[in-house]
Each structure stands twice: as C-alpha cells, then as structure tokens.
Image (spheres, rainbow, N blue to C red):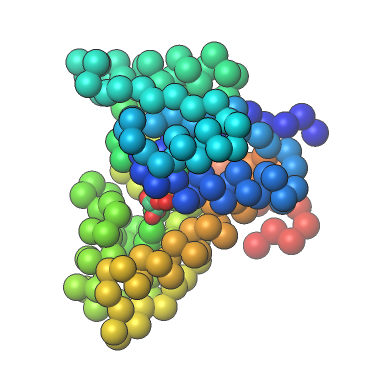
Length: 213
Ligand code: GRF
C-alpha cells in the first residue's frame, strides 16, 4: 500500500506529534509518513521535535495575514504542495475556516481531551476542558479523535476512550491521565486512516477490517 503523506499542525509542546513520530519509527504505523509539521507559533516545541526527527517544519506567522481565511489559504497551499493525504491537528490552537475544512474534508482529524459532545466547542481547550469537567462533577471524562467539520469539535467521531475522574483530581492530574489516553488513541486513528479503514457516512465513522471495534 502506498504511504499516506501526513501533515501535523501543532501550536505547543507537541507530545501528540511525538507519539505519531514514534509510532511510525516503531513500525506501528506502516503506511504513513510525516511530510511536514506546521505551527502558528514560532516557539512551539513541536517544531523542535520535528527538527530532531529530521522532519520538515514550518512556522507560518499569523500576524502577516489580515484574515483567518488568508492564513488558512497559505497553510492549505503548503499542504497541497506536499500532496498531503491526512492533516492531523495535534494541539493546533486555531479554528480552521470553512473554506479550509471543505477543501480537506474527510482528511483532517483532531484530538480533543474530553468525551465529545461534552466539554467541547468554543472556549474549551487545554486546562479549561478539565476545569469544566471537575467543576461539573462528572465521574468520567476521556479523549476523542474525530474528523473535523465546519463546527468546533462537532465532526464524526473516530475513537473515544473513557478516563475515570477521581475525587481528589486537579486539572493537572486529570490532564495527565487523559493525555496518556490521547497518546494511545491518536496513533491508532492515524494508523486506521493510513490503512484506508475509515469510512464516513453522515455523522458516523465505520471502521473496517480485523479487530475493528
Ligand atoms: C492535547 O491535550 C490535545 O487534546 C489538545 O491540545 C493538547 C496538545 O498537547 N487539543 P500536545 O501539544 O500534543 O502535547
């Protein structure tokens, strides 16, 4: 099978990027390769991780574009130059414009640190997600990998896993346990995509093949 060309968009520390790179190096993802890592943040550690792994990395500075649409257009241009098959949002802190999403629909996946449709949508990012989970008093949270559509965290769900919320959890302790789950789910979703095993039908994602959930 021909290898899928993956682009990872990341704004921060890039631990999810790291686990994808590791999964490729370990042969867990056999039919994918990261062609480029793009960040909106010059200081993102994700860029440094890409550099250490010998992967092309670009900082695309949002301040030189007047609108989100123009910025996204520039990003899309870089992705198309590299014939990107899959765009992975791994802690990318910008909401993508509808034009961008339409252009790549079915080929963009995102990881979110809660069980969508709870604790997601505009304003729910980073520690804020876990703060809201703790304040609400729910007993479980988790992580979700989903295809991106034009809404915020509303696209078809690929994988989810539950994480127990403990009575003495803090934002940090819960974030840490959820992150462990993210690090398992994201490489799995990338692998499934790269094996052509995901099919979207309306809101649902069907997983084909042996061992499908
Ligand atoms: C993760 O918690 C992810 O769910 C969210 O942003 C965080 C990124 O972490 N979208 P990292 O940069 O991959 O370490």
